[in-house]
Length: 203
Ligand SMILES: Nc1ncnc2c1ncn2[C@@H]1O[C@H](COP(=O)(O)OP(=O)(O)O)[C@@H](O)[C@H]1O
Ligand SMILES: [Mg+2]
Image (tube, rainbow, N blue to C red):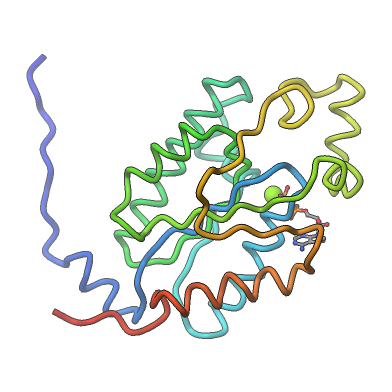
């Protein structure tokens, strides 16, 4: 087939966009079981970044499924496509100079790794939001475990679909042992420590 698409270089470069925003763009990729605390922590971190004057955007599982990914279900194939598209959107947003927070169960190691491969070294920060299944099920903030156990929801991660924990996450938080504000504080500290919130050098 003849190729009819080509890549266009932008006159305003990626690094200039980041420099204008005084930050080093990255994606904080929150992964974990439903109810582990991804949305809670991503929101808390984003509020904190916003207060410091940083430019960010939060991509949250449910919201994306209302729009961009509303054609996708929860089969393994659709979950993989869901994550691939979110990865592409996150990539565009980091190109735009933003710090992206994504809060998706993203249960499969292979899909998370393929998103990591889209980014330069150090730009993809995997945040493992870890809590035992029993804890998540007790929290059940949206009543989904109850419905999954009752057979009303199929392919529910942790119940009848697997969750593959990250092998080497950049940040590992145990949300059954520490409060949400302690966990969020730790993420912000890591961002500061590794220079994401310092001025980005102008070239
Ligand atoms: N350390 C913690 N971090 C995040 N959430 C926590 C923590 N401790 C308790 N929670 C509670 O657990 C629930 C997590 O829900 P949510 O953030 O919607 O999970 P997820 O987005 O992973 O499905 C919330 O009710 C939150 O208040
Ligand atoms: Mg959530």
